[in-house]
Image 1: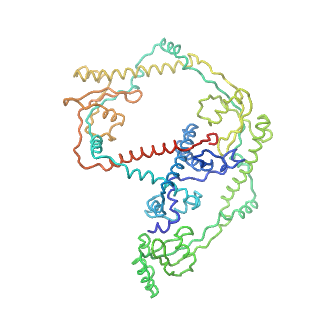
Image 2: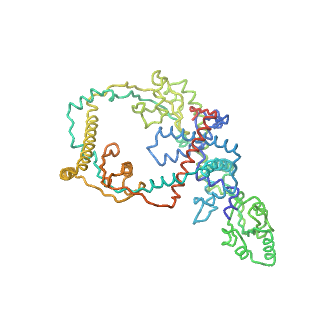
Image 3: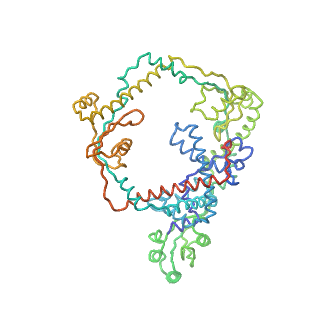
Length: 615
């Protein structure tokens, strides 16, 4: 109950962690400096535009998370895939919003409050923490109005999927058959034969390597390569040269005071009653000298706060429901209110403490001010230099740009069109006709929101045939792995034949020679983690053994290894009780399929335009 009272007007923050979207940095790219990102359109759905500002708000935080998780493995290919994925999600949201409006779906504030109550990220020691709630909100820089509007839409759209789940069904006979398959158990043994164990034992003669090179020389082409010269404009480098005096910093502090003001906070107790008659009874008891704390513990129906004698702790404006907030911020210290009615019932409030609005002293925020000032000034310089660079890139040589803008002329190593270490924009532009063939400066490349570049070709290497000496080792390794794989596959088949013929003596010799052994597995289900999943999948794909005798099979295991399987038995349970989890999973699968089909139908009927150049 306490959570509902506190979060009535801020249920949207529950979704703050689901998205955990951080406000993007102020500078997004060269185009935005002249037009503003809100005016750049990345897609249109039935005449409703999706701006680059909206897109970046979704894209940037997810990109940062991926970069943190993948580190150096995050490359331009991931970037392109992520952009397309985010844009598709945003288009889907627009389509679902249109559909939910047509179906008159709504989401209540109570439903948003329920999300808050169950979100552990807002809790400390198992209870909702107002301080943690406020901290997350403050760190992510969102206003209530903006984020509540967005997240209410999202929750409303999900109702479509939930309603599909409610309407999906599985017949008892279908469920019974699938449950029998799902609960099936198999008993088997297996031996793995690894290609790596035999690579060094196979021999490849020199002539075979030479013949492979001659017959497949189209596989051994060194691609066209280019080396570039470039100048780079970096916000980070500009920031390093920003200097500020204490006087300038204090003036900036005066101008930015609103950033450093802490809101007024009030601490109150309350007693919540559901019916007015009981509420009046408690008022009479209070007026007769009754102890507020004891009466709160006895009568209050707010289960969260009554154990603390109704204490709600400190809170600011915008946290409590409107009726409660209006009253408590109009009260005097120590005052006890009359009845205050809200959607939760009747409140009796006692104001215990007031923390006035305060301005943090200059000295305590000096470091934060310096960072903010440096960032602000660097952005201004970056903007001005961007305009200058844009003009010079079309009119002057890189050497002139270096002289006029005090930049450094840098040179890359050789790279080809398939390079994944460099930003994809550099690679694409370096091999464009203007730069590669005409030798002109490129246009400004926006490598990130705070880094720009202009490039020019310095040196080119044409595509050529690699010599035999260059690729001899590569071919030899490939042929050895190929021969080892073939040997392993034939060995597995030979073992199966010996097992089928019951030739135990020869089988024993082969297993001893190659140091092979059986791994025996007792009854297990297909979702077991006791054996490698690839092997379990092979086992459950085999036919049931006939006449009570084991069956044998040789299977490829991955791209190189092999496995020999002896399937001893198959059994199913006679369980009559329905598997609720399986039924829920099947219903979810069915509703997901319907949901996907609905989205595809909506897309086929909508007028969707995507402006990839603006991404």
